[in-house]
View 1 (cartoon, rainbow, N blue to C red):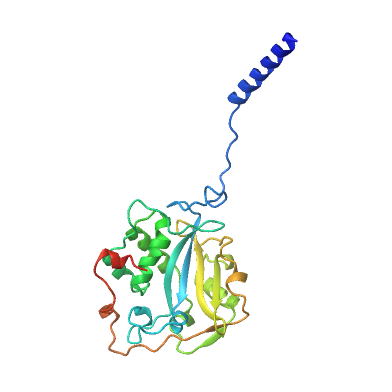
View 2: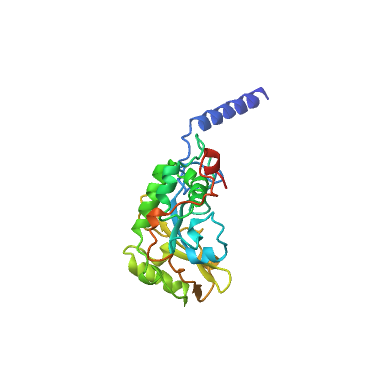
Amino acid sequence: MRMRLLLRLLLLCAATVGLAGAPPALAQREPYGGSAAEREARPGAFDYYTMVLAWSPTYCASRRDDGYDPQCSRDGRPYAFVLHGIWPQYERGYPEFCRTAERPFVPRSIIDGMLDIMPSPRLVIHEYRKHGTCTGLDPAAFFDLARRFYQKVNIPQRFVNPPAPFFIAPGELVQEFVAANPGLAPDMIVIECRGSGQRLREVRICLSREGDFRPCGDNEAQSRLCKADRMYVPPVRASAGPGYDDRQRRPSRRYPWSGERSLLGR
């Protein structure tokens, strides 16, 4: 009896030593978002970017000119495609509103420097707070990258300043962007339409962290973003006149420019 008990104890000790000395299993790297731990919003932990170009006439059609949004002001510059933002993405899912060591304050000089392609102070502030904080970049580096991405893409000619409305199939718009941008393939771009007449709303283009065109992940599903066979493209509104100089554009007096609290609003 004692011998059996002693033998069992010896076997148990041997097994314990064997497990303790066994080499750990090699962990296989998954894309960010592949596990619950990786899906936690951590600055700099993402797989690629989606650059979002918004069709300004569609956006402004749903808003009134209240003086708070220079993009839709009737006496301002007419806009076609504008930069909505660049969004860090996982292959499945995306981070947003990441916690940072410092408050996500966007200096006025940076806001002013983006208004030619992101014509809304509130949009600039919102995009950094929601998306920029997840890139690991400070506001200056984030918006420098956003401008570089925006300048990389050639807009098809008939979308530069169309004076009259027209209809187009989402696939046709994809092909026009592909033709105008070497290196861009159909699986790297998706179209969003919405609202009355299935209006063109956004074009989303996927880029690597280094800024190269790349295939989109699961987030950009064309069947989810626009199911229409044809989209309505509202025209760019008439300009403010031959004497208008965009460099002299001034924000509304009603927009609270002074103070950090106001710049963090929305």
